[in-house]
Each structure stands twice: as structure tokens, then as C-alpha cells.
Image (cartoon, rainbow, N blue to C red; front, side):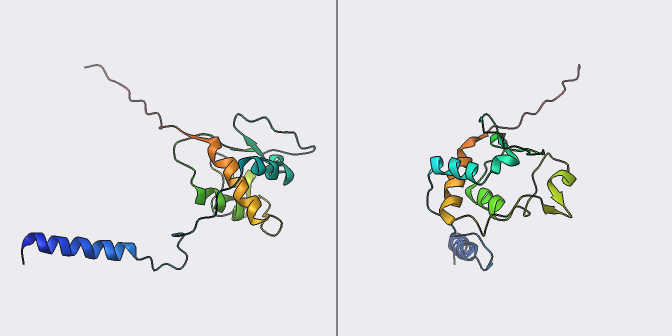
Length: 151
């Protein structure tokens, strides 16, 4: 066998093994249908998400007697907020707590203070909510500043 043949066989084997996903908890293949952003905004307000969340650059009605912290959604981020991350944040808020906030403000005993809407939200509302939120994030490269020392 030539060296090229061996490399081709190894590459094919690697692709075949890499394509197999034996983890039963894998998100591979999971994708909800596209939602309606307008209906997502209505769901956001109907479920009073604005009681605890603000959205960067978006004017939202004030919820009476709402107390901070107002966890900001949208705005400039250094990484894409994927569809899966947003779905997970909504249906399993304790999976990853909000960055940039004191842990005692957004969690209790390591669990998110966010109300879990799973028993009250339809799948369509979830789909629409993600369609509303995802475009509100603007990916910008992180800024690095290097001090230049004199020679």
C-alpha cells in the first residue's frame, strides 16, 4: 500500500468515527422551526420577561414593582449567541448563569432566580421568543490593547 492510500483510509476512518455521535444527550440534529420575531416580542412582554430583563437599545414598558437586577439581553457580544444557547437559557436557566452579575443577585444556591416557564409556555412561544432575541445580539471582535514600550 502506498503512503497516500494509507492516509486516505485513515482520513476516511476519522471522518466516519467523528461523524458518529454516541452521546444520547447530544444536541446534534436538534432544530426547532423558524419563529416570528413580532410574536416573540409579544411573548416577551406577555410573560413579563421585562420584569427582570432589559434589552440593549430597546425601549420596553416598565413593570410596576419590578426590582433589579435587570439582566441585559442583546447588545454587543464577542461570541455569537446560538439558537441552542438561547433555547437552553430560556428552558433551563440554571444551565449557565448570566455573566457580569454578582452570583448572589442572579442565583440562589447556584440555581438561577429566573422563573422556569416550561409548564406555561408553548413551543411556538419559545420559537418566537428566540426569533425575537437572536437578532438583538451584535457580534463585535474583542478589543485588545497592547502597551508599546519605548526602545
